[in-house]
Structure formats: structure tokens, C-alpha cells
Image (cartoon, rainbow, N blue to C red; front, side):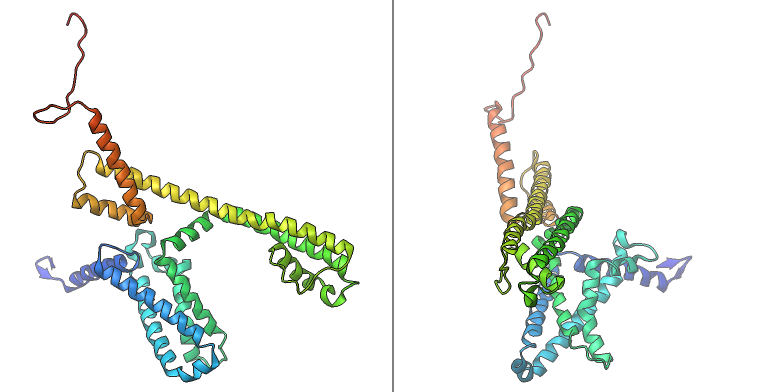
Length: 338
């Protein structure tokens, strides 16, 4: 870089840093199915998550923990090192995204839920190595690394997005459920605490029974024996069927609506790309980019493209064409006297 006739290494380094940061941003913050490097990196990260979670689970078995202690430790150190590098690179490249540009861009990124998951995934190991406190319970926190899978699963990502969109409705349903739990616990406590002081001697014990009953699980370890208690239990069981089904129905409806919205968006993009054009390689790449962005499966995309091409063919068949050049004929109707 020449600045006033003088070569400026600082400017060259700044430009190289921005270019490298942009490449890291594109590599880590999205799966490019057209790039082998991107697919390989994300496949390695996803595989490490699975391997590490399996090791954490097996490490809780005393016999396996003693027999394969060195193996589990090596796998843990390797995974933690790679996840740490991944986290540092994600934070470093965050300002390349316009959403996290500016002075506090990296801090805003670090406070995002998925960035917090990345930090929690590596933090327990550092705490175990650099503190003398008994932190055995933190080992289980490493299972949260499984949440990193939401980056590689379109279905999980879509479900989390729908859940955030419907947070208000879920909050209202949760409040109604909490009120019902407290009310049912109080009712069964009044009906059963004298007949069964061991099972319903206090409200927390009654609350446990209410949760199991409203969830329609019914372990059968604690059951009412009085007539009033049985009536209350029957009413709570019938009410629980409706209360538990409401959030599930809301989630299923919102999930289906979001899928239809994405399919319609892809259909519009595909219709625009295929309007009067052949399905060339350039068009395929643009359609593939829209497909990955919207999370449309290959089967859905192929079905939508086939439908659009059939409509175009049927429309062309309806037009009269010249027998020589095969171009559509246009007719102009003139008014009498012209």
C-alpha cells in the first residue's frame, strides 16, 4: 500500500486482517453447502460435540471412568482446545457482521444466547484446572455443548425461532399452568392431609402430586383415598389434558405456519429466477443459496421447481406459435374503419 509515495505496512496489515476476518465470519457463522471447506469444518465441529457428549455420559459410570480415564481426559482437552479456538474466532470475527459493528459489537455478540452457550461449553474445564474447589457438578454442565447443535440443525433452529416468536403466548399458558398447579395442590392438601399425613402432610408434597397428575403421567406412588380427594383428582386429570395440550398445539401450529411461509418465500424466489430463463448453473446456485437461507429441504425445493416449470410449460403450450421459428404469435385486433 502506497500512502503519499511511502509504502505503509500498517494499512496493508489492516486490509489483510479485514479480509481474513471476513473469511472467518463467512466460515463459522453459516454453513455454506457449496463450499467443501465450510462443510468439513462444521462436520468436524458437530462430530466433536457428539463425541464429547458421549464421553461425558460414559464418564459418569465409575468402572468406565477408571478404565478409560486417560482417553476421556485427552478427548476432553482436545475438544476444549478446539471449542476455545472456535469461540475466540467467532468473537474476533463478529464485527464483520453489520449487526455487531461498532465499539461494543463484540460485547453484544458475547451476550447473545448462542455465544453464552459456546462460553459455558468451555468454562467448566478451565474452572476444574484453575480452582481447588470441588466442581464435580460442573462436569454435567458440559452436556450443554449439545445445544451447539442448533447451529447445524435447521429443524432445531426453526423450533427455537418459533418458540421465541410465541414467547408471549407460552408465558400466558405457563402462568395459567402455575395457577392451576397451586390451586390443585391446595385442594388435594385440604382433602387428603388428615387421611394421609405422610403423603399429603404439606403443600410441597401435594404440589409434587399436582405436577404428576396435571402432566397426565400418574406414577401411582401417591394416590388420594378419600371421596373428595378422588373427585378433585378426576377434575385435575381432565383439566390437565387441556392445559398441557394447549402449548403443544400452539407450537405445532406456529411451526407449520413458519414452514409454509418459508416455502412460499422460496416459491416466489424460484418463480422469479425461472421466469423466462433456463435452469442454468448460475440459476441453480442462486436457488441453492435461497434454499439454504430458508432451510428448505432438497425434496421440497425440487418439488417447487418442478411445479413452477410445469406451469411455465403449460402456459407456453397454450400460446400459438409460428411453425417456422416457433416463437409465440401476437395478434392485434384493429377497430373497423382503421
